[in-house]
Image (cartoon, rainbow, N blue to C red; front, side):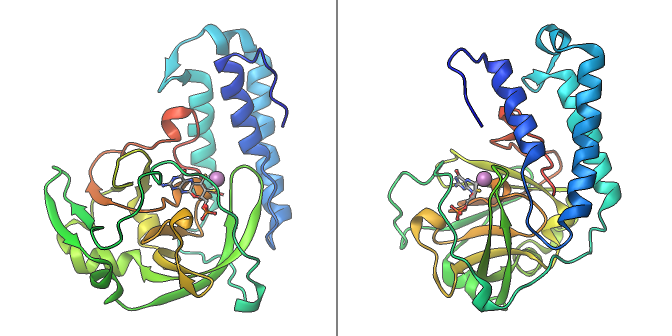
Length: 267
Ligand SMILES: Nc1nc2c(c(=O)[nH]1)N[C@H]1C(S)=C(S)[C@@H](COP(=O)(O)O)O[C@H]1N2
Ligand SMILES: [Mo]
């Protein structure tokens, strides 16, 4: 993962995309996934080779990355959707398998956390605030535990034990009339980090609003007081220190998608 000094912004985007495609995976069905991933990466590389990087650099832009790469993301997204049964569950481990989770990514976590003043704002598609919830309000929902593999797109993975509530229970309780909306947007209280999610994955039993990691309340760097955790996406989608949950009709703002990553980011 070398970064040359005279790398242009376009070079950097290409490098990040290719690194993202290459991220190693450690889970049980790693072989199958690697095979599929290699196929997707190979396809992108072949298309790139046919048309030439020059076109990528000078051709039309889409969401601030070359349109051809954006097409690659769309192709990738369709392929992953088709390959994945959305109801399938990721493997769960025993609690003793937890490896400890490193801290990665501090966008939106810099203002010191005032835990007593913190509220979770639940918004409708127009932006109207439906609820300002305390942590106790969230914790009153049925507790959910899972010990699962956490994967960062940078290429590492660790086993973590999460405690929280199912996102679906949260949505059914606090926004029952909005659970059919196609998207959910999450943001830190300061709005510095944002994540866009699709309805289907927010309904999955392994998508949690977590308040504890490895049996203790989340530390600030791990996203206290409440963060998203899901087995369906890479770490980038698991927003820490959630300030707002908004049910939406259009694709929500997404910090890394705006910087050239795939919006979907399934694995
Ligand atoms: N608010 C916020 N949430 C975030 C990030 C971030 O920079 N800010 N980084 C993401 C990324 S890239 C990863 S891999 C995970 C890391 O979570 P951890 O620090 O608990 O291991 O948080 C995700 N959620
Ligand atoms: Mo990450």
